[in-house]
Length: 116
Image (cartoon, rainbow, N blue to C red):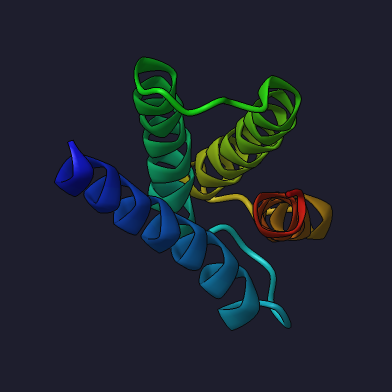
């Protein structure tokens, strides 16, 4: 169980890096790249799995923090989904949507790290 938890945390951190790094890499010409989309999926799935593992264990889960993180993860996921749909249609991703994807991910990272 320890290895599974560590592996899920590893994938969760990679997902955050993909979203945030993709945002910084395209900051001057905002878009939602494919790695941000994959990162959003990874964040949502691994986050839910990590909460499931915590609930099965003996540790306490801060349900309010998890709720806030889930709302932020869904926000990033939806923004990335909408951005990728625009790209597939050959349209330009609105700046607000592109920055919303990365900015919301940054807020989620801050909540995860700073909310003790």
